[in-house]
Amino acid sequence: MTVDGTTLTQIPPLAGAGAEPIAGKARLLRLPRSPKVVAGLGVLALFGLGALIGGWIAPYSPNATDEAGWVQHVLVTGTGPGTNLAANYYPLPLPPSPAHWLGTTVFAQDVWSQLLASTQATLFVGLLAAAIATALSILVGVSAGYLGGAADEGLSLLANVFLAIPGLPLLIVLADYVPSAGSSILLVALIIAVTAWAYSARVLRAQTLSLRNRDFVEAARVTGEGPVRIILVEVLPNLIPIVAASFLFTTLYAIGAYVAIAFLGLAGSPSSSPPGLWNWGEMLRQGFANNAVRGGWWWWWAPPGICIALLGTGLALLNFGIDEFVNPRLRLAGITARTARKAGVRLRASLGATPVLRRARKTSERAGAG
Image 1 (spheres, rainbow, N blue to C red):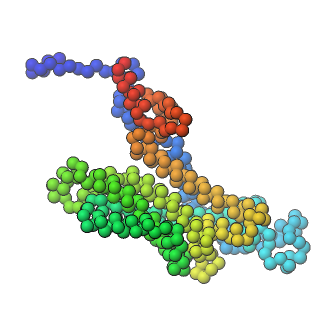
Image 2: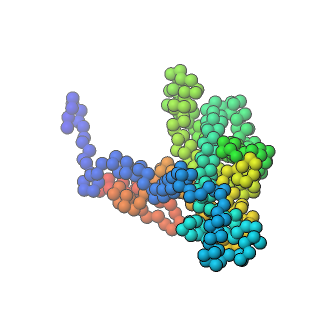
């Protein structure tokens, strides 16, 4: 074809299966359809629903005792510590039953009600601590990476100091010096956030250093935009995947830290003054302190332990899925075999290896050559 004396060569379209638009394949590969993301979101949605409506569906108060139900159980079934009820200061835990879905504790308290109340406090503390720590890491890390100079040196020194201090001992000291922290979700979250922001700040600083000299940042600087606007509008949107992964990782750390200090008895007991919050660590502490493992009362300590493992697995799966979605070389690891066939990609990963996008490029090159 000739236009204004210039001969233009029209590139022929791909034939057969290659005629599908490449943009459509790219969009198909970019969709976050990883089974890890789906499973992680499902686990988080389940625990989030339990935290939101747990207070409404709990059949009993977590602190209420049901000694009348225990006495009726002994009289009906003939099982119990003995006929002399007054000789036993506390009744033995009742196993799961229609009246108590997860049985009772040695204090005749409903374990299911305690688990619902503990899920609410544990999840809220974890998310709030992660939000505070992520905000601190963004403030320190992005500011240090973009400003440079003396500001970078000072903020990096601050982050290095918190990285050098062992997290759990610092957390124990802070929780011990704030005795009323156990009764406040905000105070507990602040204490945990203080020990959780430094690592993410270092990661964000390194990424900001690689972005601050890019052409689009230089163009914004030349047009007269201020540092705050450049950080919020130009730099920070390019760090959203890293911030999201950091938030999930910090949430997992915060929940583990909260369970640890509660298990050590530093988060306040619900029977203390001021009363503390019910959480999974407190349930485990009371169970182990009253020989629940030795007594074979699995319904007392197993449910909070399973909840900790499930929630940690869900957060980890979602974090891995985001990493696969963000990292181009790991993007094929987040799609199913059916999706890969639709996109014209062949997944052939060796044992123990993660499929990378290089295989997709080779497949595309072969399709184009054909």
